[in-house]
Length: 289
Image (cartoon, rainbow, N blue to C red; front, side):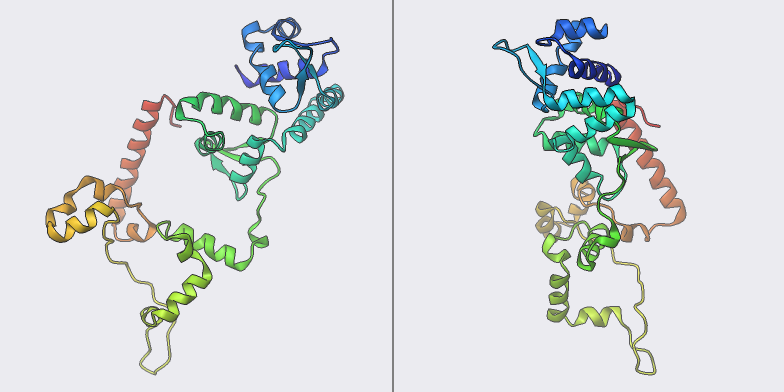
């Protein structure tokens, strides 16, 4: 069911003055198929816009919140959508999207994954998550930001300037090395490591001939060892363990690893990644722009 069709059913249900609404009456009011209309009232009931009308499980009536939305919709389309966003801002899906988009735009696939995670749903429910995301886009809660990215309608919720310095340092360290544990990302843990390992400062500051310390010097890091638990012990006893495909693919590739590549190798890597993305999207039935 398309998002515009869902909005038609939602608006008709909120504005209903009948003793009850059900799939038959919503289909007559909107001109849509009765089967489609039967899916929306349950969602509206769970989000506080409808309440049971009598003892029949398929009969509902609009709540006070829904009537307020209908009154706003009578004024203008934007007023109605604004009222709907306000009514749903406390729902689990709205909180999930606000949190995920708190620091800036996120790809559509990332939002679908967050909806599935927060709903504790399996991947076979992906289509339902896509429909819900389309509805949030239709009401203006999530805004397309170009190139497949999405943004929160009020902009980023967490400003960098408002973060304490410790939080910014933790965020930067997390982006630099996602393999580090949370305790290693804390500033106090880093300070403790420096105290316990004085060679850390000696490695980053090289004394000049005059005896004064120069600015920190950048250097190309050494190739990293595998981080797969099963391969660590094997590599010591068996040199051929380096050929283990799983051991090669499991560790994430960091920016520090890419500086070891030549320009041609980086371009070749980019082409390979684009090919993998295209094949993965084809297998999952989604086009690649």
